[in-house]
Every structure is written in C-alpha cells, then in structure tokens.
Image: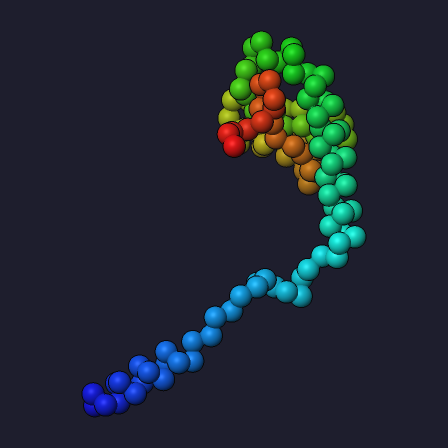
Length: 113
C-alpha cells in the first residue's frame, strides 16, 4: 500500500502543467479597435469634463466633495453625498446611458493615487 502511494504522488506531480497567457486568447481586440475605443472614451471624457467645468464653481461652495454623475448627451447631472443615491437618480432618468462619476472638488477626482 505504501509503495502505491509513493508511485501515485510522484506521477501526479510530474504531470503538472503551468498555463500562462490570456484567459480567453480568442477574444483579443485589434490595434485599430483598441484605438477606436480609446478615442471614443477621450471624446466622452471631454464632453463630461465640459459640463463639470461649468457647474463646479457654484457647486463647490455648498456641496464640496459630494459625488456628481454627469450624462453628457443631455448635459444633466445628479449630485448627492452618497454615490449610490446619485447613481440611482441618474439611472432612473437615463436608463442604459453611459455616465461619468466625479467628485465636486478642485480636480474632480474620486479617491487617491
């Protein structure tokens, strides 16, 4: 019995296969597709940033460090101290639309780097 156990343990460890690389290698984007997505994201960010720059000075006085959710197509924004409440307000008004979350402060960033 002990001889079988030693043989089993040595056999199982010799067949260990280490896999490296992408989880789904068939789902890779082409460089053109990556560039297109990055360009669309940059345009989206710029549109949201324009709305933020317009409303930031007046909102900073009474709502410093609150969350602001911006929907750039309509120019609407939703603010609240609780991020989840602001998100639910934006999703109820604009279901399925892409929105950007920012903080009402000097830079608009959420968190630290």
